[in-house]
Each structure stands twice: as C-alpha cells, then as structure tokens.
Length: 267
Image 1 (tube, helix red, strand yellow):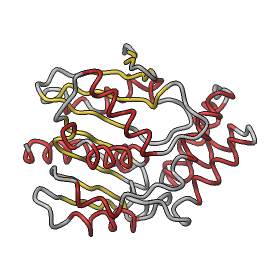
Image 2: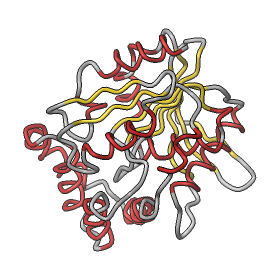
Image 3: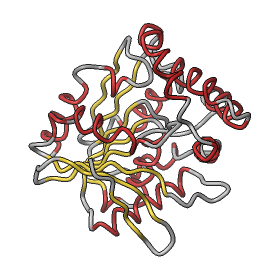
Image 4: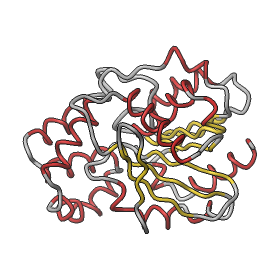
C-alpha cells in the first residue's frame, strides 16, 4: 500500500487511498501509539466490502506537530488537507479522537462532509473520560512503551481479546521510538479541553452514531450524550454494541456492513 503525502502552505500530512468506487469515503482514525500508516494494508483489507462503492482515503495527523495541538486544530488541518486534495461532500467516518475531529469538521466546514459516521467518540471530554488517556500520557512521558501498549490495549479491547493480543502488543512495543512517544503525548493532551456539545445542532448532514455498552475508555454515556443532541435530526441513526469494547468498529463483524447500509441509504 503506497503512502502518499499532501502538502499545504503550513504542514504535510500522510494518507493512503484504496478502492474504486465513485463516491469518496474518508476515514479519520483515533489516537494510536504509532501511526496508522504502518497498518495501511490491514486497514484496506478490513474495509474491502466498501471498495466497490467508495474510493477510501485514510488520513494521519499532520507531520509537523506544534508543542500543543487541540482537536479543533486537528480538525482544521484535516479540512485543509481535504481542500488541498479537492475533496468535498465526502462521507466521513471518525473513530474515537477521529470522531471528534470529524464532528468538528462537520460543524465548521459542512461543505466537506456529506454523511458522518461517529464511533466510540464523545462531543466533550470530562475528567472521567480523560482518566485513561491521562494514564497513557504519563506512561509515554516516562518512556514506557511496553506499559503504554499494554495499558492502551487493555482499555480499548475486551478482556478476552486483550489476552489474545498481549504477546503481540509487547512485541510491537519494541518498535516504538522516542518520536512516537512524543507525538502520542501531544496528540493525547490535545483531547483535554475538547467540547463541541453545544455546537452539535450545527451539523446538518445525516449522522450514524455507533457505540458500545462496555466502552472502557470514554464510556457508553458519551455515545448517549451525542445521540440525545442529534436524534431529532433527519437522517440520524444509532446503534449500540454489547461485548465489543471501545474498538467495536474494528471488532464487531458486522460494523462495515452497517456503515455501508447507512451511507447508501443516506445518500
């Protein structure tokens, strides 16, 4: 899978694309210890069911990170990358921190977002919702890549899946660099003051909100809160999983089909 780079006047951002559909789908991934770019082939394989209908773009965060970098700034940079590539009226899927970026884009740049899929995300960060992220941040600041990967994996996966992946997580941690840890801290701390709850009414496009009752990172109440503010809007849909944890969008076997049905129907 070829990794490409979009350049603007102020930053560069890596992305990859796949699929041959007429419509555009953009995936904005969540916070991760290492860039999603290293998993490009696995992502393309996972989203194969959508490739006949969509050409799919997956964006990283900008390369040149400032010392502090809020979610709103991430959203504005991602919107600028969209515009540099000529992307408009795209279906946008954001997971976790990526969902925060995606909903902010839908609020601030509605011409870029035609449909919105939000999974395991929140419209605002509270002290309780930031607890897991704060723990990860401290591990990264201490240079403990193994501890970070294990704490991260234990939080986002179900307990059964975490135990199955434990050895792989330990092995993967060996490839983490000091630069990876520094980037992680900046991106994680960017979540602290995120709050667009009062602005959700500005989202005009159809929205599919997906959560999990056993989300141990942000909690199921974060999904419920978004739904409460959007459920009266035309084109709104909600689905709550049980037993798939924070990364239900990766572990629930029917998620891609559900998303495809929503996008085809909403269009």
